[in-house]
Length: 252
Image (cartoon, rainbow, N blue to C red; front, side):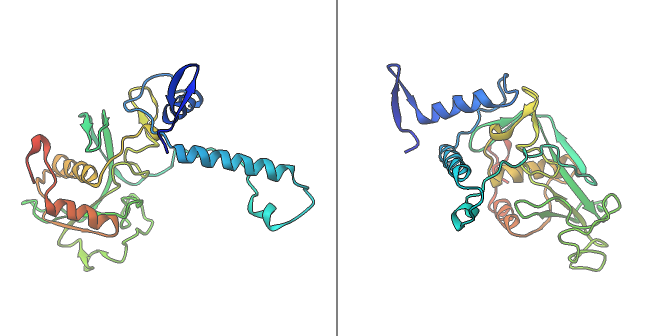
């Protein structure tokens, strides 16, 4: 049980609290308070300990002997994850208004990476907003700033299913993503450190609200007339059709 209690110097400390302080102690450059508290993962802590135990057992084994056990438990420390993913060819929408989320927590500011194809009509009634899969970038189709083929290259373009001769197509990297939009690998302006596990838990509704802000602020479109997407994208579209709350509690 995650909230198991134990006695330490006459005081009761929860396992979650113990893990929190241990992580805070070893966190790199987290001397200042961030915008949100770090998340704790007791199950991962136990997994890390099991990994260490397996690594110790493997190291103690005869280096010359080869067995299924030694091969399956070969555990070498990998490189530290890169927080500076090199990515380009997209535009950035920046929102500097503090934004609060459904499950608590907030971002003091955020940015959304997006790409577009075609031309927005004078009436602003031909915009199609493409919703990506959960881990996809905004690069649904090649364009002058990024000539690499996109993940929906065969569906978007002149004369194709989503005809850019008729429609103005916009695709974003979701809020919380890792292809230009603000996410765990971004820096928290409150302490100039990476959000990491201090990034707030966000919902599909939160992601859709951020996209709606982009479409309104950048293109002056209050309501996109059409949507398309795949995988996670269909959940986003469902949220839009069901009506997500606007600021101030007003429904869409």
